Amino acid sequence: MLTMTAILYPVATNAEQALSRPLGRAARESDARRRAGEPVVFATDPVGPAFATREAALDAYKSRVEDERTGATPEAEDRYCRLIEQVAEGTRAPRPVEPTYADGHRWPAPAKAPRTVWRLAVSYWRIGTADRPLEAPQARVARKSGEALDAETLRAITRTPMRPTKPQQPLDIGLFEVRPPEAPHIVMPDE
Image 1: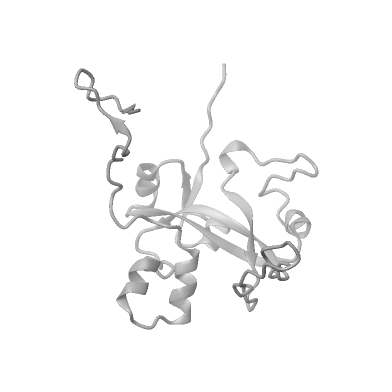
Image 2 (image 1 turned 90 degrees about the vertical axis):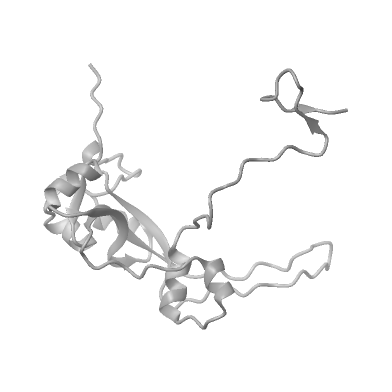
């Protein structure tokens, strides 16, 4: 018989507590809410020191993450940690370049890539009343508002995944497509 196991995410107030002494572990939000006794939100936050190479990070977190070098993997319910690569603090992103159209090439040689570091990212159920990282506005909304943004808000915007401003509208049919009267649920090309 094949048994399915779910990842049991820690229930904690922050990522450090999720690693060291969580209140419990739960696969579902309802279970996490019961353990915490209050609302929870799912979060993934980086913790611990930054490592210059992936190998150094793998050596430091042997039992927590999957190591393809040795084939070691944590148990299925313990896979709530992963290594992520981030741009190092104080490192600037390369500036945009203009096309050169020289020597048969459209773009100049790429700039040196920014220095990156490896960190451990922990996914966990954060207790709803616990301190949250800065909730960033959407980039397009912040840009249209015209107000100056501080550096911390800009960093939070760059780390936030893109979200739609409104629900996606149904797709329209193209200029050379028609819906036949006997089957209006079908869109056919018109020649």
